[in-house]
Picture (cartoon, one colour):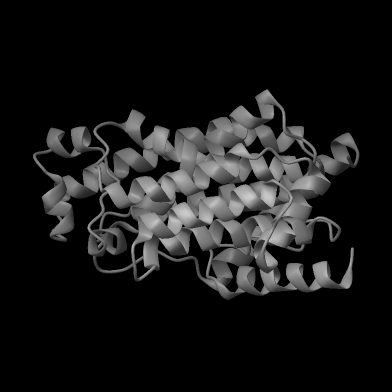
Length: 290
């Protein structure tokens, strides 16, 4: 790697660790040789989200320009530290281009403000907003195939739904609601009730329903953990256990999505990390290190 590329990846690393997440995206469980590629992918995804959520001007135009920059980078003419690092990562790890374009599309859809009619619409959105990240992670590890992709999609969709439930209040402030209209109507609510930040027992019932659906997806995707090397297994288990902890928080009877955003305390994170490590070590003893 050239000194210039080292600097470009360092820029991506700095952006990665500037942003809050339930768990660091690039944990100590990721092999050191692969971490720069994680930084590049995360920096791309983070920048797309920032354009879709916080850009002060015309966000659709900004996203379209970002897509053109991606076009140039993948065609061999990258500009700026993010796209230079990303182009190198795509080439080194033979990553597919579609997930990057899907992430841009998810943020483009956010600007249109169209509510989800059904849970199927939620899953369709997850196909663009979350599932590409899991596929890119598998690609970085050289493990992307149809079966692993399917299981990864289940986990990533579950994580996205958990994030929706975690951010109901913040999304309402942005004029967004990611709860299915059909489910709201079933309990006598409408999207306007969410945007008006009205906590009710009926809303909590809808939240619990989405949490149950996400839990089922976590259970489905958990099988992927047994199909990958132990380092990635640890990372996946951390994501799942963290997401499940968020689901537990939003299921509490006194949960008010407009009063506080559920977060995992440092102690809770440490406990989840320990649980993930112990489980992985036990499997290593029983099956041998992969």
